[in-house]
Amino acid sequence: MDGIEPWHSGLLIASQEDQAIWFVCDVEAEILIRTPGRPADIGLDESGGRIAVPYIALDRVDIWNLPDQP
Image 1 (cartoon, rainbow, N blue to C red):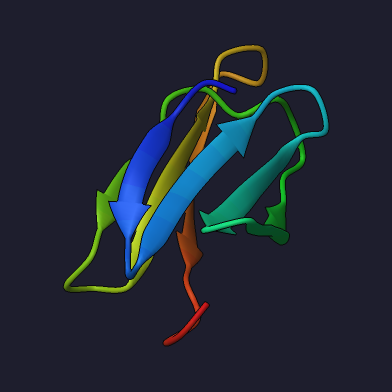
Image 2: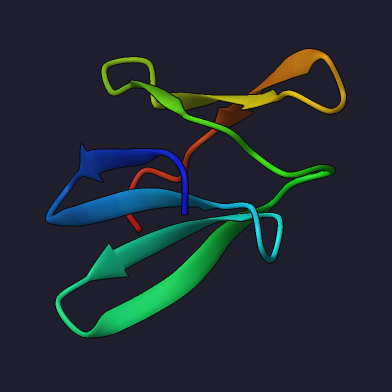
């Protein structure tokens, strides 16, 4: 796990191990985004409903739209 941001009633978590952005709430977890590389620390634009996901090995940052509700 690298980046963690609070979102709705849970957490968005960037996982380098499985190349994904997870949403974790209470005891449940689901993959929201499968990323093309190993995500580093993430940035959340909560008002715009987007998340910035950097990839050090790919030398780029992707902007992903988040669902209205997890």
